[in-house]
Length: 448
Ligand SMILES: Cc1cc2nc3c(=O)[nH]c(=O)nc-3n(C[C@H](O)[C@H](O)[C@H](O)COP(=O)(O)OP(=O)(O)OC[C@H]3O[C@@H](n4cnc5c(N)ncnc54)[C@H](O)[C@@H]3O)c2cc1C
Ligand code: SF4
Image (cartoon, rainbow, N blue to C red):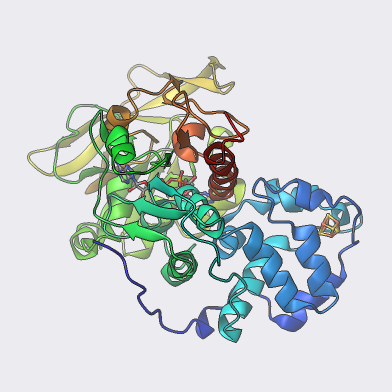
């Protein structure tokens, strides 16, 4: 099915980030206008905060918006979900004086301001017909690559397995952190430039990529992400009420929200895992009415991979953390009624550098629960392993050049989570840009 432009309702009430034009300009006035701006160097996708903040500071609001959008088709999304404290704001020189410039909030504000003003900084390309490229997967990596190639005059078709585009922006990150409408708008902007997105279209089989080539696509960008959840695999995993975070988060967005909400509302939920996805899952379960929500994690609080602010937020929402706790069995007849856990203690560091959890014999206890959501990790789906079976792989992900995204098959490029493992939206955008540039070089006969 080809996706046509749907209209989104107005966004006025959604302005967040705590800024308006006056406050954003005041915040930009704190900028030191650094030479070789460290903030810009710290952005993986080259969004260039040094430049857009300078423009805003000198009241060139449309210029600031244009800088963001030219460099990053997901400028709003990144403003909302980038871990800026680890990237641009960490590098900001102003930190040495008092505190960093609120780069993420300014970026987000500028994007929303542009929408409200009806300002479209990126125009449809004048040149077309330079060649045909296929993109597999419509997450931020795929859609960025598609936009960049379209702007260069290529005809790009994005194949997406799910019924709506966006990947984790739509089916992973919860809407209380990333509004559906903002994502919708950024995707619409990409579609309006001429990118074709074919949803409900999965590329499959060992000859899936070759078939695309036979259909006339001169290059393929593979950005299929990591969609197969790694499961605990303990006894009772097949009971009704035991599910993965991928299933839970996805179901809330794919028309099954009622079924999932019914399961969770007024019930006790245990989320297993200690990463950002576990925090998002626990908070969403709480928001849709779970009576009690537990996070079960087998190492200590300090070893939880989630960011400190996410953990604090979850605790503030009233989520209970059971740390040094390893689930060993789910109990119930057909439906889950409890989880048996064993206490752990920390031993010597393992390969990840974190101290290994060791189960304490005889420390079992039973936690009555109605729903268990496993938020451990994800890996490439089986069908992706099949379509990419002719490509080189390394450590469970597709092997691709860091500079170009080119894989072991010269006309196939790859980027985003399927190459990096679990990563960030801004890194997916960076990979999409890099691969688009390399594909143009390749098709012009300038690359390998
Ligand atoms: C719950 C959650 C919270 C997150 N929070 C943050 C955050 O706060 N900040 C941040 O920066 N990052 C966050 N991330 C990570 C971020 O979302 C990912 O790094 C990013 O989405 C990866 O982009 P991608 O384009 O590589 O793949 P994805 O977004 O995974 O998109 C891949 C797309 O490919 C499609 N696909 C797969 N196989 C096929 C096939 N065979 N044929 C056609 N289509 C296919 C999938 O359906 C999907 O739409 C979060 C992730 C999750 C799950
Ligand atoms: S590093 Fe900070 S102070 Fe320097 S240009 Fe960037 S935002 Fe301004």
